[in-house]
Length: 103
Image 1 (cartoon, rainbow, N blue to C red):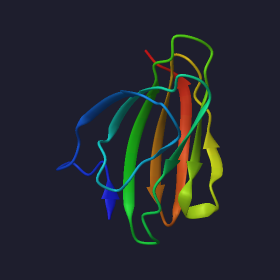
Image 2: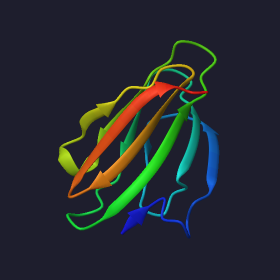
Image 3: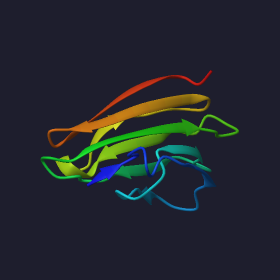
């Protein structure tokens, strides 16, 4: 399983009405307006899965997205706020995210 594999690439933009659980088949680039503080759960891709996803927080205010690792008891792995992005990589059963300014 993988998320953001080259053949699945793609782009998705949405405003959340509730929390979001991404799946292995979702687009690799997510522009998300959380419309308030929301959780985004990154999928459990198994111990041999690989994945990559970029999440842009497109909020109009100081709204935070809490990125959680579904493979590890929903541990928080990143918290991009307004105008920040997170680049997340899954390898060996764990998500790792780097959060910074979206330029």
